[in-house]
Structures are given as C-alpha cells and as structure tokens.
Length: 286
Image (cartoon, rainbow, N blue to C red):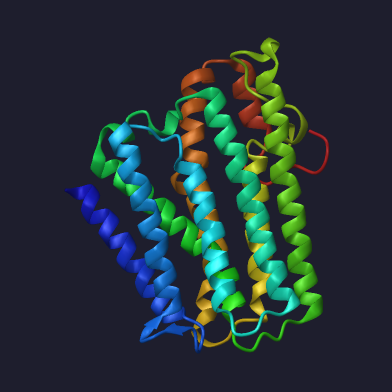
C-alpha cells in the first residue's frame, strides 16, 4: 500500500506544478496543456508497468522513458501557436538526446540482460509502480523548461543567452556520449572482465556521463529562459531535480553501493575513489 500512496503523491505534485506553471494561452478546452502532458506522461509509464509486471521484466523501462520524452516534445510542437527557430532547436536537442540515450540503453539491456537496479524491485508491484512513476516525474520535470519554452506564445529569445545554453547542451551531450562509448568499449574487452573502468573520462570523474547529463539539461534551461514568462519560470528549477536525483536518489548512490559490494575491498578501487572526483571532472593532472 505504501508504494501506491507514494506514486499517487508524486503524480499529484507534478500535476499541480504543471497547472501552476502552464504558459499563458496553452489550454485545451478548460484544461491547461501542461496538465494534459503530465497526465499523458504518467499514462505511458503506467501502461509500461502493466506489461513489465505481467512479464516481470524491466527490459523496456529506459526505452519507454525515452519515447515519452519524444512524445512530449511532439505534443508541444503540435500545440505551439508560433514556432520560432530557437524553439525548434530546443525541441531538437531534447529529441536527439532521448533518441540516442534510449537506443543506447535498450541495446545494452538486450546484450547484458537483467538490470541490477530492478532485481528485487520488479518482484513487488507497489515498488515497481513507484519506479515507473518516478520515471514519469523525471521525464516531465527535466523536459518541462524546454516544453514550456516551445509552448510560449510570444518567444523572445536573447541570442547571446540562447547560444550559451546551446553550447552547454553540446558540451554535456558530448561528455555523455563519449563516457558511454568508453565504458561500452571497456566492457566489451574480455581482458577487463570483473574490473572497473578508470581510463579516459572515467579517470577524471567517477561518473562523467551523469555530469554530462546535468550540463546538457542546464543548457536546455538556459536556452528556454528568455522564452518563458510569469509562472512558467518555475520550470527553470528542473536542472536542480536532475542534480538531486542523480546525486542523492537513484543515480550515483545506487551505483556506488553496487561498486562497493564488488570492489570495496580492492585497494586499487579504494585509491580510485579517494583520488577521483565523484562527479565534476578534474581538469588538471592527478
């Protein structure tokens, strides 16, 4: 029962936020469009849960999440009263990121098999519901600044600010892609079986892919800032949720527990943790 209550509370909070920050004029009948989008996000996750629970599988979890991002952007574009070049670019950044990460994670789960994060969670429907609902919260909040900017009735972006945001997105996206590729190549090498990666970007940060993701979402928020007005500014807090979830909830803490269980007694791993920043990459030599 506790899991169902948590899921309901999370959904209500997001829907209330969507209603409050809805851009002026973004309505379908009497219902704010951001609320419709939030409801759609949760509907997609809960439909995914039905299949996942029936087959006790997490295989499509990340793929569904990425497809939800793309769906949200397409809905926003279809209802936007005026789509400026900057709004198209914001939409493109979100879609490109979601398509790349979703396909990457889906190929990985097909190759590796079970996702360790869900080994116990998927055995309990309430806990699985919370996991899928959290993904809905994650999708809506992280994309909200960009989506609100796309729906803005009178976009008036400042070129210099927009370029800074776009540059941040490019840097973050590149960091995430390179880090994922380096780790994938490391794991594919049989000589590295049972070892942890500490080369490339991973020699400068224990989680360079997460750092890249944080930077790119900050970039989206910066691009969106001059398109927003009124209550929509609340969505500029979205990068803070990315930082909170990745550093305090389901990202780094989960991976660190898993890594500690595997290599916690390894002096080399202990030295790596001691000498390598957890998140923000070290720029100079060690």
